[in-house]
Image (cartoon, rainbow, N blue to C red; front, side):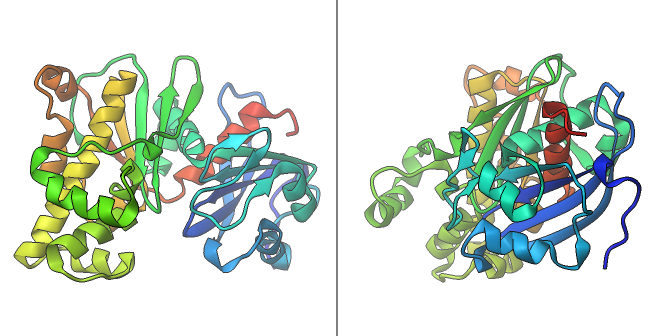
Length: 333
């Protein structure tokens, strides 16, 4: 059994539900009068998303052993997909979710749904305005730039490729489904692109390459082996053969290109924040091809060189962001 801390009506349940893992946490609201949410992470639980055929099944296992304090008034659930009218049909999860059904399954009166990268964006927002939260999220500046009062771009490759735009001055986060846009190939990559089109269809999306699945496709192309993401990550951390080095270099190039295009599309000159499982499992951000590709622009190279690049290294960022979103968008606690 879990111990409860404080009054249950000052708790909220936060979630970061992705294609691989569903992370849950109980947060305690410390100061309801603070301009920004003053939160304490009390406990967390991870469950494998793909093992469940419906959210209600996942909720049933989550509620075992008193994980959620009785009387918890609010749940804020980040979900890997577009949220419309309190519902989401995630592209990389076998089940959908609605706020009313989730409230019934959890026994919590108010449930909010938010796109998982909007939630990550709220974590960035807290980090940009609060040094304590920034330390909790373990944010490292990988490449320096010039400070600028401007939007922040958030990009993350995991099961898919998520994006969001953070507006610190307005204390807002704007969603994006840019990971489902078409990926731009260079001429020297066309042989690989043709192979993908022959097997996947004419439209090759960003998340088909800037993701765990994309890394596996590159590994198969360069190394001639089809392996699951966990094994590919193990082989590339660090790479040993020439083919493995080529795989990582191409993945870093593609990831940097996806980030560059999003920064240019949104004029997010305040900084690029990279999150997601792939940057934690393989040294893609540290590879020289990532920064070279990110800054590769004939007419905007100078602008891109001024954009600092940060890595959010905490796997709890989506939970912190979902909790912040819940507090800022609800009067329940």
